[in-house]
Image (tube, rainbow, N blue to C red; front, side):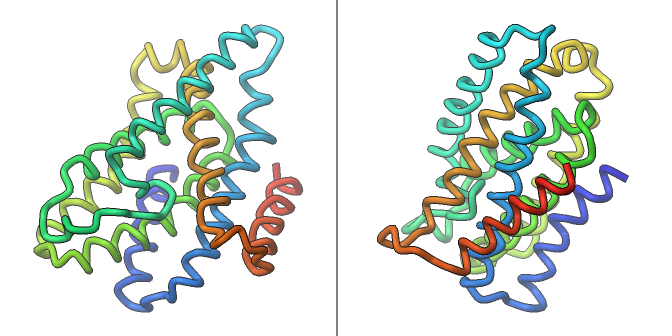
Length: 225
């Protein structure tokens, strides 16, 4: 079921682009909701999970910081695709290999903590992937890549998170160090979610619709976790 949900989330976002062509305003609200939901799950669920008595708090904190730095490095190659903003002006007709690799690494890492957490994280990643798939598909179509290239890109991206789930459950290393890996991914999630929430504010103006989407996600997380 986990694999189906993860695959469906990307497929659903792609189909929305093909059949509905959502306005940018709606996509921004979806991004804000998904970022807030991911941040809420991270703070209310994942962080308490790794900061337990049996775990070294300082070590967990270090892994979280490493995760933040790791995502910063990946973002320098992906140009912000993980949080819904792809900045590749002047390279529209050239296949973005660095974007492809960094996005796949990010998607793979998202799957690593899922099997060692509860369903709240799975739903958070699903909600996060839908608007990202919308933005990514829109970019690939507008960049005028061949259909085979677009399908290959999206298929590979779709399978990376399920691959992370599979490996984390089958390889002893990932099972033994699941808390440290979860702490690392917490850093990744903190970086992505906060940028989603704050990068899109034009001139730091208050946006009531975005504010409602953020609050709604926080409330929803709080009552369901």
